[in-house]
Image (cartoon, rainbow, N blue to C red; front, side, top):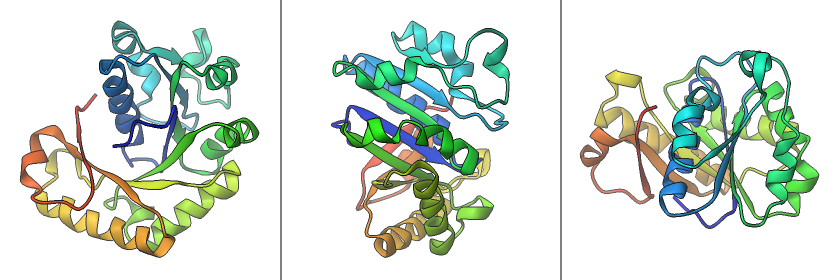
Amino acid sequence: MDFSKRIAIFAGAFGSGKTELALNYAHRAAAEGRRVALADLDIVSPYFRSRDTAAELAAQGIEVIAPLGELAQADLPVISPRVRAALADPELMVVLDVGGDDAGATALGQFSDQLKSLPHALLLVVNTCRPFTRDADGIANMVHTIERATHLTVTGLVANPNLGAETTAEIIRVGLARVEEAARNLNLPVAALAVRADLAAQVGELTVPLFPLQIF
């Protein structure tokens, strides 16, 4: 996956795996010696948020930007004012974990004017095993929903087809083909195929970059 953009935004529907992608991306960037902050903008009743691993991230030198105190676990549209300052810091790589529905994407939209003037990638994480992104039409609808809510342009897709512990190489290959179809229709690149690290050797030859995932 391309680490050239200083700001990487991972958006996706519930169950897409976008938080795992954001966490892995932040860890990988930090391991390469980058100063990294991970901003948790996922505000809509998720089971798992990047802020839930704040201690582990801090141990890697990664700053976590999220509501503090009693608001840390609240399912409320509370966004830390630190986000805007982090985006403006030219020496800081910022990874944004963003919900893919209207409310989550709208949280990102408040930074659209600032982001339009900064180098960034807005990546939609697609799990074709989830209800709203099973096919090319559903993926296109998700892209358009995010773009309307954020006033930003999606720059690429990340294929993350999985059924958790039941994921097989065949599920991955079929899911990638559907994401590639959607990408062709949308004239977007497939930025990467995300695969659980222990399955990475099973997927065979690829025409897109492979991004092995450590599961947090």
